[in-house]
Amino acid sequence: LLLKLLDETGYFSVVKPRGAFYAFPRIEVRGPWRSDKEFVRELLLQEKVLVVHGSGLGKIGAWHIRLIYLPPPEIIEEAITRISRFMRRSLRGKAAIKGF
Image 1 (tube, one colour):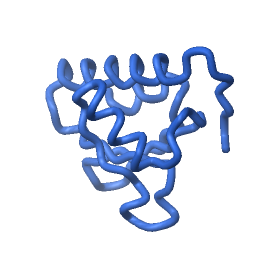
Image 2: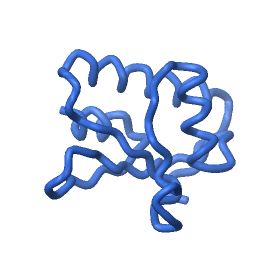
Image 3: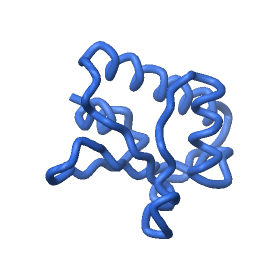
């Protein structure tokens, strides 16, 4: 469910995890954030959704976020709704650059 909903937003590229209970989507649009760490901070402040910044895992994780997909479906759906709202609000009036 989490991977499907993330993919449907159009803001992330998603690869199916192998053997873990984490998703590690790449943020595919450049917004006002200078880093994935800033993205995570603003998401938490504005929407109260906590994810982990991928750059904490090294350079290869830059512009990724880490989410766990163990919560019940209604929690996952609410989190993705909030993430989508955050993305729309952050990108409002700005030209989004995909695949940076």
